[in-house]
Length: 254
Image 1 (cartoon, helix red, strand yellow):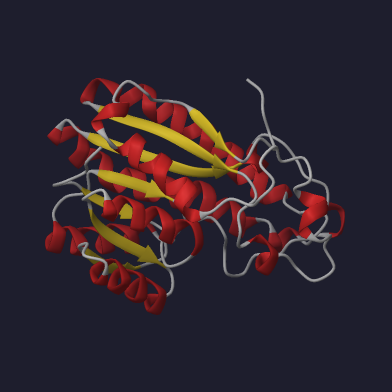
Image 2 (cartoon, helix red, strand yellow):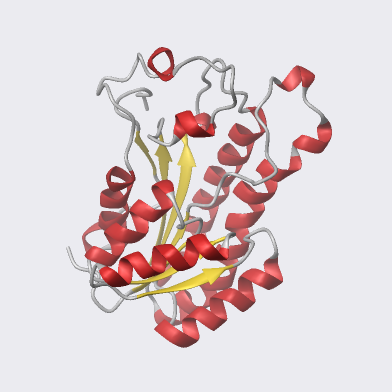
């Protein structure tokens, strides 16, 4: 599979799974627009891709700010060309907090909805018209098993709500743009290898959380990147409106 000549925008790509996705797409030949809320992370990731022989530019902006999204994408497209592949990976707000819903403050709810639902709607809206005009596009939404099932002790009520909401929205987007050569799919991630650092002190140790995984390890960015490369390629042109779970078998079902 090759993505030569394609331009991919990956949000939240300065670290963790987003960085793994960006590196995988670059290795397959795509030029990468590296988005991150933190400019230093975006620039460092873009530099790393360049050092590995790829093409990348940093595009720091807040995906929850529609005007900033539009300006950031247009500026990056001026350097690399129009976006062919969008990976909506940004999903953890800087001001988010994990806690049981019953004791949470209503003020803590919006950040997870804003970044997971509105953030992905913003970026998708800003690239779809160009994809329709060129009659090619790939939208890959990064979601989570939390959108379909629950894990005790993760404090992920509003995070799960945002993920479930964007999965539904993307299926409807797929129904509108398939005739224009655009596919829209979701990758629902299981527990990833950055999870322990992200968990608040006091949560259960990781082995008790992933003990139901058929494959007894946490996910890696490269696991998600490999799936993203396939969905972005012409080999997957008949796959759309799907949610594909990548989780080591932790969640299985129809």
